[in-house]
Image 1 (cartoon, one colour):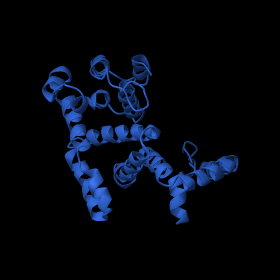
Image 2 (cartoon, rainbow, N blue to C red):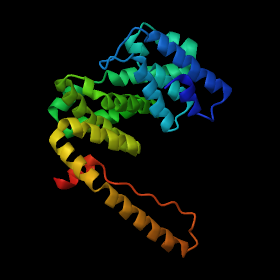
Image 3 (cartoon, one colour):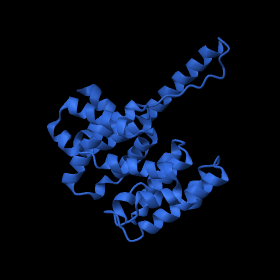
Image 4 (cartoon, one colour):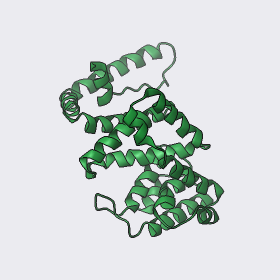
Length: 251
């Protein structure tokens, strides 16, 4: 995705906000110019992916700018003061908040597998994000890292997947960002239990047409019933269960 593609997905931006996102794009691209991801792609592609995820959930220009810049304090030579001068106090605070969340000792708590510790960490992450957008940027960062986890060494895959399932997916649930929760759970499950994941995914694929026909039939029936009460404008939607959710029902 190029800058124009990102901006096209943000049709309601004011000229000021448009400029903010454009400047953040250019600065992040410059700061990460010499960095490469494990996949071999330029590091900046990750920043763009995070910004795109944030745009998809309709966050504002400050959050999207922070998404583009979210790794600059940790991975480049820029300071918070410089970010504040260039992009304003709120964007700098968001980027700083994401950096602080990234430094939480997640792995140690996960090794103990203590429910109370995990609940405390989730609460601490929410408390540290005085602005909830900090946590949303961090969730978008984790989501893209999970989408590209296949490039990491196997041991790191397991550690990251476990952290994601125990901390980040429940955190997304606490915030009501269900699409994040479902995808984080499924991606984590794929690495933690690959055989079960493949078996359930194959079964779901075989029955996909039947499920879609059933959902269509039920939706039509509900529409007809609602119409009897002059509720023709009601929107009815359905979704199949996600792979991890099905696995949970099987236990």
